[in-house]
Length: 201
Image (cartoon, rainbow, N blue to C red; front, side, top):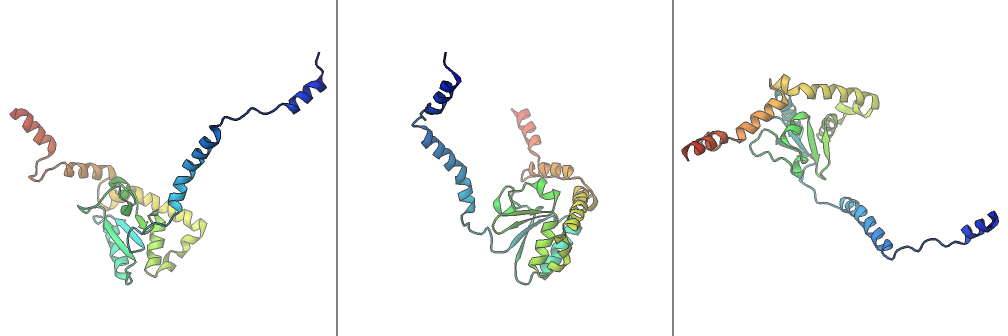
């Protein structure tokens, strides 16, 4: 019988299994695929616009419009640009608007940096006020405890903002937008046109 010493020696001297010749190329390809997105993101990119921030706001909200008017009046160096999410030409899902859709844009105050970074909530106020030389107004947000309190307060306001300032929920506004977009140039909704065409056949 083979003793324990022989077994130990055998296990020490045993050669590891020979790797497949395909293993190194496959591993290299896997590493390359993992690194490629990082390399693409870390490289220099052209700015999306010449200003520092694009503020995406709701012009049909009186509070929002007041804020935008105030920031615009203080923006003497042209560091801000503004995009009205209620404008007919508002583009959803594009880089300059942070790839936002209408519903998400309604849910909070958003801004996009020239490098494409999307900001939401209280950080938008802080960066916008800094851009117009009023950074001290929101300096309290640099305190972690104060930031948590402000974030919580704003999240509650944002949840009910449209109900308070526009008298409709976000869901109702989205439904109204879809309905408005289904109306053609002569004022008939597409379902009505489809029914009329079906009956006429």
